Length: 406
Ligand code: CTP
Image 1 (cartoon, rainbow, N blue to C red):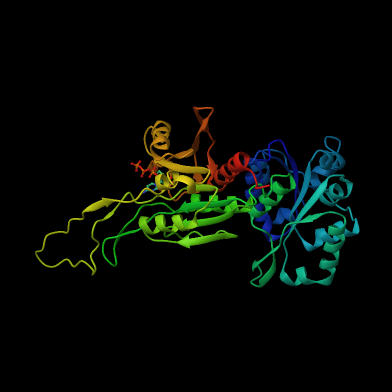
Image 2: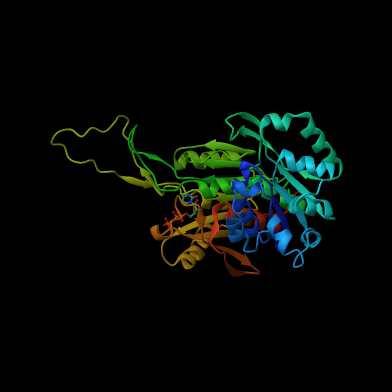
C-alpha cells in the first residue's frame, strides 16, 4: 500500500493522458494522495474537471500559476510531494526537462524540485526512436530520473511499435517499487485458480456459470508483479493472459484439479475459480438429439472434487498460505466464516454475488477478508474497490504475511 505517500502527477499532452484519471484512482485506492498538474497540451486530452473529481483536489494548471501563485507556489507544489510522476511524458516535456527549460507550471515544478522523479513516456514510435529523444532520456536517466516503459503496441496514430505508455497497473507497480513495496514475493511460488469450469453434457453442450475470471486473473497479475513465480490455472474466459504468469487453460473441474496438483509445490494458493460443484455423471459421447416424441433428457449430476479443500489438505505439499473465495448471496460473512472452516483454508475472501451487486462479470467487488489472528476469527471489511485493487490489496497482505525468500 502507499498509505500517506504524496504524489505530484504531471500530465503532459499525449493521447495517453486519457488514462490518467484511472491512474489517479488506482494510486488513491492504494492510499496515496495525488495532486495533479496539467499542461496546456495535456488539457486537450483530459479535462481539469475529471482529474479534479478523481483526485478530490484542485488541478494545478498555468491559469492557476498566474492567478493563485501566492496560495501555493510552484516550488511548494513540488516540495510537498514524495515523488513527481510525469505520465504521460511526451517527447516535448522530456526535451524540456533535459534542457532545464521552465516555461510553464509543470516544467517549473520539475526544475524546482529536490524530490525523485519518474517518467512514463508516451509518443509515436518515430519520435521515440529519434536520436534527440534517446539522448534526452540518457541525460535524464544519468540524473537519476526513473523511466517506466514505454511498451510496444498499437498507437493512436495507427502505427505499431515502442512508444505506448505503460499500462496503469504497471505504472502503479513501478511506484510501489519506488516506495520499497516492490518485488516482495521474489522467490515465492504462487498458484491461482480463476474463471468458471465447463462440465460437458455432450460434445457440444456444457454446464457453466457466470464467472468472468477477472478477479482471479487480476490476483495472478498482482502476485507476479510482486515477484512471485505464478501459475494461473484458468477455466474458459475471455480475459487476456496476465504478463509474466504461466497460464494453464482447462475446461472442467477435474482438469483444474489435475493442473493444480501439477503446479505444486507452491508457497501460496489462491482459489478464485468458480468451480462447478457438479458434473454430468455420464456425458453423452455424441450430440443428444431431440427426436420426435422422445422424452426430454434427464441429467444425473455427481459432485466435483473440491480443489480448495484438496489443496488445504495436501499434507506436506500443502502451500503455506491457502486462500479461498466465498461467493455468497445471503449472510455473506457468516457463511464465509463457516466455509473457511469447512474447507480448511487459512483465509477466505467473502464476496456478495447477488445479481443486484453486479460482482459476476463486473469490474468492482466489495469483499471481506476473513483470517485467523491469535486463534480468533478476524473480519476485515474492505471498501468497494475495483477487482484490480482487491487483487493488489490481497497480494500486499500475502506479501506482508510471507515476504520474499531471503
Ligand atoms: N472451490 C473449489 N472447488 C470446488 C468448489 C469450490 O476449489 N469444487 C473453491 C472456490 O474456488 C472458492 C471456494 O471453494 O475458493 C468456495 O467456493 P463457493 O462456490 O463459494 O463455495 P462452494 O464450495 O461451491 O459451496 P456452495 O456453492 O455450497 O456455497
